[in-house]
Image 1 (cartoon, rainbow, N blue to C red):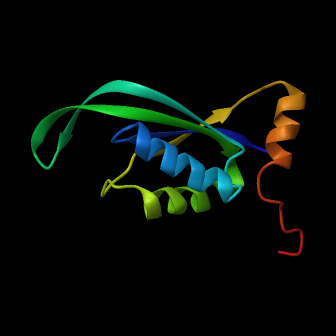
Image 2 (cartoon, helix red, strand yellow):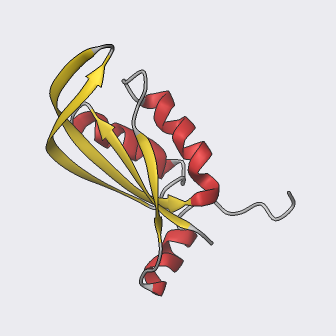
Image 3 (cartoon, rainbow, N blue to C red):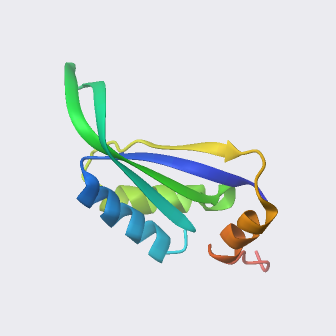
Length: 110
């Protein structure tokens, strides 16, 4: 099974809590962590932006990434939310087993 760290930026801590809760409640991630107060510098619609944001990091599985992304987009305020994934190359086996158990069951009939 391939596991992922999923990185999402949110406009503030409240939105990160809302998005993280929606994803974890749907069992698309086992856990969500929020780091508030990040300074972001980026281009948007031809203008340089400097804003405060919150980072949302979720632990999930590769096979759930498309559904997780759709869930984030459905509750996120940004037109184009940052939703990117990094592979988890190795980890505490007990933790990875917990991650597997706390996310959606795989449908073996498909």
